[in-house]
Amino acid sequence: MSVQPSRAETIRKSRRTAVLAAFLAGSGWISGVLADDTAPAKTSPAATSGITQTAATASSTTVAAKHVLTYKFQPGHFVHYVGANRVQYTTQLGDQYTTESGPTQLEVGTFQSHQSNDTNTHFRVVKVDDDGGALIEPVVDRTRMTAQMHGKKAVIFDSASSGAVPPEFVAIRESIGRTVARFQVAPNGKLMKATIVDETAPKSLRDAAERLDTRFPFLSLLPATPVAVGDKWREEYSVIVLNGGLKQPLPMRRIYELAAVADGIAVIKFKTLVLAAVNEPELEKQLIQQVPTGTIEFDIERGLVRSYTSVIDRTTINAFGPKSLLQVKGESTEKLVTGDPAEKVEASSSQPATSEAKP
Image (cartoon, rainbow, N blue to C red; front, side):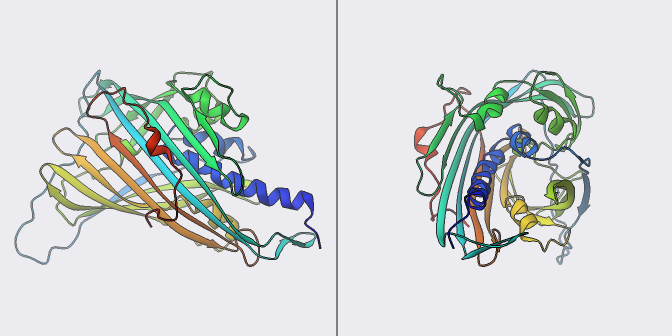
């Protein structure tokens, strides 16, 4: 049986959506754009978050040294970061795709696509409270994105270019260089409140800010009390998935552990868990990039994240029907710019991910 055009287009669109969705991982602001633009607005449950701290049990009688990990915001300071995100998608399609009207024949084979996203971001400290919390303005200064579908020419978008903007990147282009909201941040990096300052910004960005859905790698959650090497703390929050055409929140947990402290740098490991039972491939496919593991380097003296690295290596079986799968491998990094804050996105760093991507 030949491939039905409408169903084949559905599969191609699903693969394109997966690639474009990966662009969202590299920047907190961008994370609200395509996710909301592609989702129905019938239901929009508010995301919830919370923090619970646990401590490792010491087997030695020696008292472990405790370390105070806290952000040290300075009023008027501009803090710059350069980020890079590389993702490889591998899709395997079986011989059929089951629909409401019955099975449809599909093209059988393995397909690979790649995406990369390089960003320059900064935040300005507007003011600092007596308790050490701060009001900050985060801004994406530049992004350079490359997406290459299987057998297709790469699509490249550079926000610094004066050329025509592809339709799928218009919302992202509109977010560059704009202060959409100011965030009240606790000394441990928890977002407390958002105040919209640009009412003309895309609604998806404003909504994501107000719900505190935006996640900034440079504001990774720190423990509320001093910790020793081996101690753990955790963060509770939720992510929104589409289930039956409606938005549904799923509970998540991120567990952090102080792995080491050397030369004033705290090394923090983290992993991410889904706290709900998810047995549907469609939901698993949406969550595949929401459960990274990674490492954070925190400069204790300066009170700043020096680097943030997260990795993904996950597979969803039957992602596009029987005998199909979706595998995602990638790495995302965010590094503090210690030299010229106008550091450019290097062209050499924008090559697509390969099968060598770190697991």
